[in-house]
Length: 571
Image (cartoon, rainbow, N blue to C red; front, top):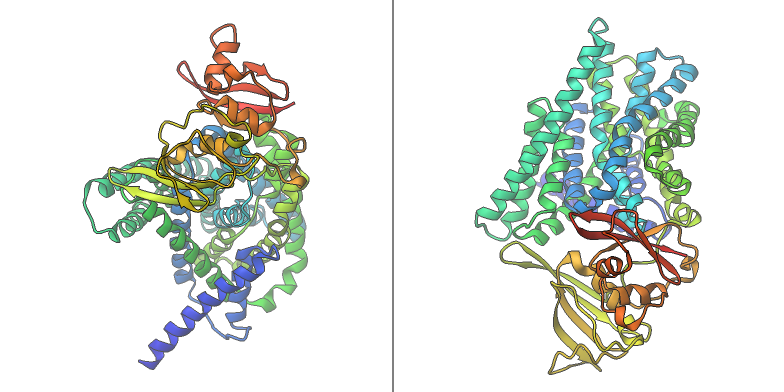
């Protein structure tokens, strides 16, 4: 009994210490995953903890389950609108990009390390994919406001490129173990099976899980558990049938997270916590497995391999894959730099150990060292590089409060609070009329700390607090009315590079005020779609543009005859 209490106490203490350490080190800009790896190494056989963990199959099981949870959570919180702008470039990076990165890195490993070409390609494949846990954690923990296409491309790529790296790793191990097998037919057949089944079962599994949660009444606490269990069922069943479980669980999360969902906010909050716990556990375990004394002998080889991967292979692969999409060089350079390596390469390095390959131990420590370098060099510098390349945007919101509501009938609504300032558009312009988004409902209006008896939205003053219930999809339009239009000094509007993406339903007057443009008073109440239709002489098509005094409005997306997305460029 005392032993059980000791295990529970010390296990909880390690997790608590990891969380507290991450709070402190995040202020210094240290990547959180590096902290967890470091604590794991301290707990390992050569650290003060002295723990010996050599059960590689169990480590692979824990790592795979943790990664499945992380990918499901990543899919849950990836808006489907991101797919409209980031899917095609991300798929190129997740397939051709992984193969190019793996091939170029493997070529260097063959030349420098003297490996056989299959062994060199295997090492390249293991480190060939970016890591979803690392990228999701980095982008969200740093609170970076990136251009929508850049952020969408990075998140979709990191969530969808693991299956390709896993596929290449398994194929190359099989070729090393069974060199007489037919290469072409085997690779093609396995690729179609893995990706096809993964995509099909992921979408079907997501729809089935959605139906289950929305149709079956449960106690409130069971909804998140049902979603978690369903996600792991999709992952496990897809793997049993020969598909890519990682692709399937990410797509299942994407389907569930972008449809009306009973107790949706409760489910998403729960999975954010579970995904964070999975990250902590996975990186602690991987830190315990490694033997630190084995790292210095491979330091030179791993350092050169990391340099080629970060500075040559990844940038070349990004350049080739993004060439058809005309990404500016700044965006390409940033996407190349955020190709972080994390838990996935280390878990893939367990595969040769499971297969009993001769160089498996050497591969594992080289890969671990490459991951350390990636987290140290790339992870520590993402925010400065984004600012240097002028890709970080001003914060999109200055809301003082935001509460997600679970409303019966799978309606996703939020209660948001705004404190109005002198430079808030609706106060500074003293508009006599403006339109709230269709889903917005004013709930409370406070002045001087007191609740006003009438909800008078046309008499707004600096210092007032407004509380509005609104759909999350309409929050950007609401922000343009009630968020103070100021840009941090280090990010003046002239220094922001590229184009803003706006909804066609955004109000022209609010947009003009936010970006310093002048429009006639009679046009201030129009939406961007209505304004563009009035200004363009013929039926608008994608690419049509209208210039104001300081901005250019460009038709970017249409659904039938409707203008759904408008690009805004500063002149």
